[in-house]
Amino acid sequence: MNLGGRTMKKIALAGGAFALLAALLAPGAALAQANGSVPALHDGVVVDPAGTAYVMSPAGGIEARELATGNVLWRSDEAAKPLLLVDGTLVAQAPPAPEGDLVVVTLDSRRGTAKERNNIKLPPGQQARVTDGVSSSFRAQAFATNDGGVIVSWTSEDRSAQGLLPPEVDTPQADAKAVAERAEALVQQRRRGAVRLDLASGKVASLPFAEAQAKAVTAPGLTARIGGADKAAGEVIGQLTSLDGRHVLTSERNPEDSWNRYRWTLTDASGATVGTIVAPVSMAPFVVSGSRILYVAEPALRKEGNQFVDKPLRLRAVDLQTGAEAWEAAVVDTTFRGPFPP
Image 1 (cartoon, one colour):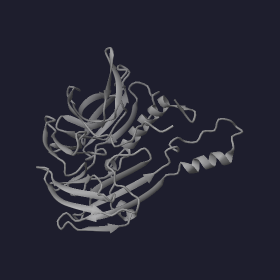
Image 2: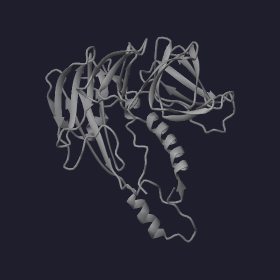
Image 3: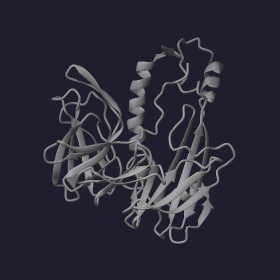
Image 4: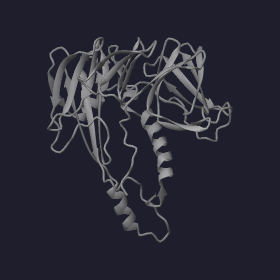
């Protein structure tokens, strides 16, 4: 099947690259902690290094998993997607209300029981979906403020289902006007909004999106370049600071493994090495808990022996001393990856 001169295989490969880039630039991965709060590590995943991970479960609802074992501590159908952990409260997104409104639920992080439920009105025609559609995307994020409040902001994008691919110029004689029109068709219609949620009173107040973003203090992120596949073995490809700012991941090429092509070295605030693992991607947002690194691995299809193994989006806990995987948990993939319409 061919779409606009590009094969589905090329699109799939590009999709993987964009997925990694999206993970690195995810809003949660760029927000600093305020008052001990824990923002999202990945869309649908909040990991508290103190001992618990909250994930958007493929079985529905939210699961709380013990970091030490990966065991499920509790499961709740009161909400679908964890957004933020603050002061023992998990702020989460529920499926949209019948009118399409954004529904924000606060849960007791120790038991999963619901505390408050708030419906946030959206502009007409908007749907606060928890996963992408073929031609639409809705993303909610939450972060704590220094004055004890919680900001919940959202971005909604609509795009033409036939405008998913960038314009191509096949010949020098290509009609410039046609190319410009194609490019214009790719412009996504984006709507944004934000509210301030008072956890003590449960009150919700609207505020401008720009003001909400201004309250988000950015944390250290990429501190060095990200290179390509032509980097020599042993040469640093890039560095990434952990979500809580306590560790730094240094990535370099690993020519010894055709699948796990990168070696991650983790250091603490003093610069001391705490462990090394290998991975198939150059880097990903992460946190360290005890002797383990936790990060979300993108979907992958790999050959093991004589068969292909299809790995879903998943939260991985890997031992930094042995490099062995301690446990993994599947996570709902909120990104639409196909099939695309012809």
